[in-house]
Image 1 (cartoon, rainbow, N blue to C red):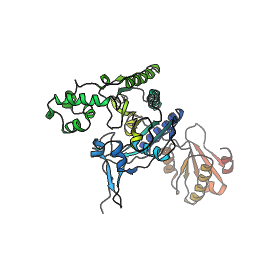
Image 2: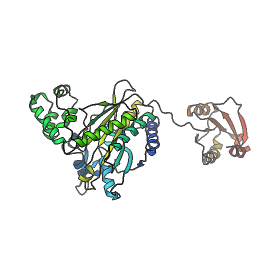
Image 3: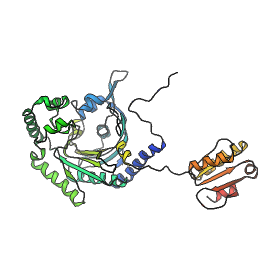
Image 4: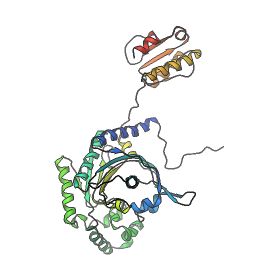
Length: 413
């Protein structure tokens, strides 16, 4: 019978690799908590229209990459391709927003996009997101970038570059879009890739983000959005830069930086790391005022970021699993039940460890104890079972092996 194989682009994470994700989640909880963020968990399955309305039907994500299917009542459902839309939907559903109230959330979990799998990018991938709702001030953007940098530093990633741009607002961006369209029309359209030829009509800013070398060369002299910002957007962007300057955070202004999703306005940023040599983008985000209202919620400002956890995992050194406190070696099969019960008493004391299920030679059991990395090897055979004792071999200390009464050993813990 043929074996059932995993789906292409979906990866199993065994303990050694999963430890990196657990570590990132722990550092995120500790770091984000210091900035007043609370954890929010949202479903992985949402109504398709949520992403059509939030991300934009003309984007590559909605048009090409979503896992979408009808349920039994022919309602279209989608495995979430990103987290922000679901967080906004949850925020609206909660009906907790009040004028002047600021809400801060972080979330992490699996996302799904039908893309070509490659190193650091899978069809099921994991994101870590943080969002601030209800603050239209530039200080919220600045705080968010500072928190992201602190989080990455706390992971041990220090060789970072931050790229920063402003995308303008719904007042000044139309003028810039028209300037871009006029510029594109001055070029030979056939020299652009097929995707960019489509984007010229549907999302002109995305042409600036194309990775095709020919397209990148064609937009070198394209107009820059920072030359088209209104006074309010200029002031907002100046405050964001002032906060980063005041905190001693270096950054690069990149007028070609855009976000792949339609809902972004004003501040946008991307963080890359050089910790593995070549530049690797690990996080990005920005402001998306208007999205909450567009999805049927209150007129509430918002800003946020997302980290790709697979990318971060590539940058992390090996994360050590917590060492067990004990390994209980059974060397007489008749002692197996009693050893299991004693191990349970140790665990109830708060110790972490493993126990062999059946008897075996002392050599094989010591080999297993060494492999486990346990601090002590507890040995139980026929004599220990009869005498209610336990033999203790210290694996990391230069102490002689000793045999103690089990009750006394437990009392010493």
